[in-house]
Image 1: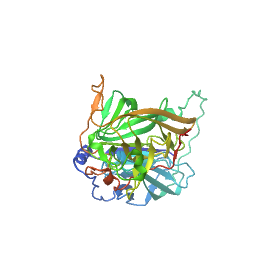
Image 2: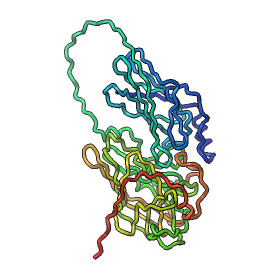
Image 3: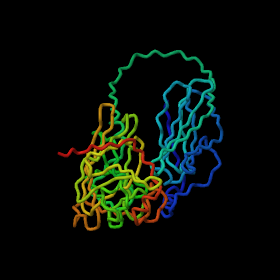
Length: 430
């Protein structure tokens, strides 16, 4: 089955985005009367579909039926990526479900669905999205589909000589996906605030690449090679280490450490990771994310904060590497990145995913400069300093007051980080 989408962006969308950047919380629009086949909205932590009618009628099975959708009630900055994925399928047709189609928020448009034979059928519309903290959101609606019988005049077949069949070489799934990917930017940058997915694997024509998905400019996504990016934790990220046994590898309670937090703050870098660019058609399982090496003046840790303040350590540089996480496809998550001492760190990550032709893998080394005065004294030619405005990124949650102590951060509500397993390889001592 084929599904084709068209979109009409609501007038004034850019004004809405600008208004959101100047306000703290993302506010949902007032409810609208359902004038489309599917009016989508977000209520609390749920994705919802409101329908005008549960019946769809098609006069001619040879022509696709149009389902109209409306995401006007979902403001930009409400769901990750400002997009909702729609998939339509005729339940009893025996045909596989159509490829999902990503549609923007604050818009209206149509989905064209190829029809089965005449008669009564069930048409299912599924909608999915991701909350800003990485939690999946999903909802579906089922319509009664009635396809009319159309009498067509018989036409004598016209016999033509067989035409030569040109040789068609189908692109590999890897190349097909890569052709849809935006280009990688060039030039060095220093990023010390705003939202980035620091570790974001995606497929390019020559294979799997771990890259930095830079969202520090509102409404713009820029892909960068890790070697071109310096991620900086300024003195604003300094905080006191709490009395937590799980975090004792970073130092004694009260020690001053540098924290890039799990929840967004306007004055420091908000770093996460993402597997949203990898499609199940090309990658058949979760991504294995490994921390394989750490060079720097002190310990490094990555941990999440639970709802009751308890930390869960994902990476610990002091007890033997590699540390390994299994990250499902479609994940966008954040955690606390903590550095025990100021200075320059080099973190090496490896990402591996099962592809159709065998494992896909890439290894990249990231540079983190911790504390003021740790950057190079002068930038090289072609280097840009990325110092975004203090407005929170449109992909982040509602504005939060600055957290001055890690103890308060441990009491914050935890982000739903989609991590399945963790294993650590211990170094043997003689």
